[in-house]
Length: 603
Image (cartoon, rainbow, N blue to C red):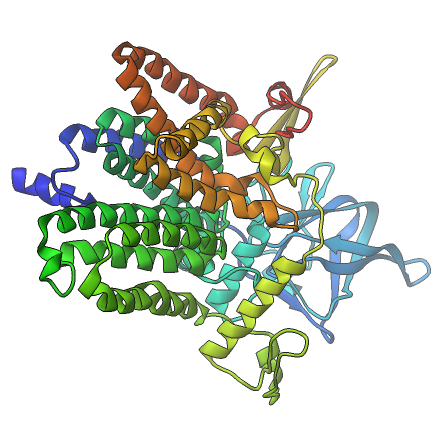
């Protein structure tokens, strides 16, 4: 048993770092968060067979067998968004088709889209006005519920998965995509089916991970969210162990573990198919290994062995290598990893200046070139393997290389490197030149104060009428931080900066530089930005809270009982907001009661 326990501990770092208490706390928090994340994460099914329209095959004629009232058409759309078609009914008296709606727009991919009809008819004609469309399922409803046409055999792909239509009055996040999932789930599907990728504004690693989940579990809400959920779960032991490394204290590590487990933003981002959890995870991982390297290298320098060694021993340099690899993974997921890389470089350079490796300098230089430049470039490029470029399918022989209006590489250059370069240039220009507004955008300086939330999903589940009282039950998913944790982090950040600048505390300096690297660059971003962009910085603010709590306890040991109360309050606050961050059906009045400020939209 002791040998088994030592092996378990060695997985997380130094074998003497984690005690049995640490392991038990990690298990409790991880199991709790796993249950919360997987509870109603999303249906493991969705319509997958599809009917395709194009320039030649664009007409769909539905026969209901008799004149009936049809209220709505519910379309589960395939991977092409905003498909338009005209809708007509056949007049048997005049023998003519009469247009009901000439401009129907079915907008969201992998989601049930409702189209109003409210017409008494027998024949319904749908004519796609786009060059191509993909429709996974049609469901017609009338006053008595689902209406089944008599000619479903003519369009088997449109009527073979009727049982997947939502059982509630309206579809929710359980049944299809929400918010930015329309981009990432679509692209994951296109990776798996070797189609041109739609989402090209970020590097590809995160989308490859999403595609992997869909490959294993299918093109359904559970499938496109599973990998995000797993990384959200991995965050719990990572943050706990990093805190234990930083503070050498089980209680402080447990505090940080509670903060990450019961933060509303981390929870919501762990249940929605976007790439933000991936990049945040890799950012924390790269700083974790850098801190471990600095600790190990300082101990190594104290021994004096570096004076005769040509390079640091394996237990030292492997940590630096892992930091570089994690940085490469972060940048390969989202270019905000570059911000984090700058902070990492500052920390590493400060350490080098103090502990200049002298005769090891040349090898250290090439070691860093390998693990912080070459390998990250490889890691950045490899996820482009499944990417199919629409422009490359035209058979272009253009081999122009131009710098006249920005860098241009013709599609005559094919292959992995060429498409990596082309897409990188495109995504940089996209974010630099994007001019757009959004009702939930917010300024970077407002994020720690939770000035504006973001409503990702807000679906009516059912309506309960009792006498003169109408109760609306909604499924809402909101991006918002846990107020107890986020607001309390503000003085802790200030205190940490004070100890860094005034008292020259090294640990405070490490945390402050890491925090600044994730946060300050957003002040110079001109495009619309959102509160969830603060998550990587907020993770370091949680460490700053641990740092402050440790100092408070050192000043007054009796203050620990108040810290327990604070942790309990943070957990209670999480569950108060749970209905509006999880999508679990709740009354609209409950969501409205939590909108403490006019800028909060929770339902």
